[in-house]
Image 1 (cartoon, helix red, strand yellow):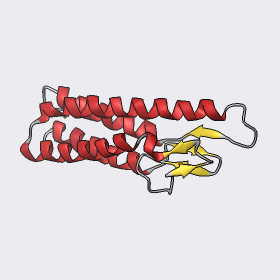
Image 2: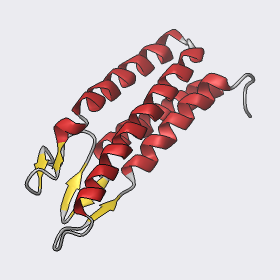
Image 3: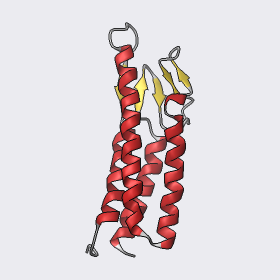
Image 4: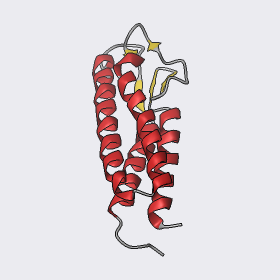
Length: 138
């Protein structure tokens, strides 16, 4: 197996993990990219999953595209998936910053970021490295 395949598989796994683990916490409620933690609507509309639902669907499409690229061994396409996933994570981060600005100064409401975004960014970087790697790494 080539190093590009390893990096592509690593990026795919990290993107899947990043979609399911928490990206932020609003009080004791968990926010994730995929609505697995019942985060459709939290704290009277401070966070609504529809804010990033389009991007969550796009991440699923990126996952399918990555699987296709791994099967047909077109590693240059990982540059596209890497740029797209990093762009989507940036938009999600901006949406979370908006939530953070809504809760700043509100008593009894706390907001904190979690590791989900870091893992998702690592997946985008792995995709970019897989697309940009010229020789086999040993």
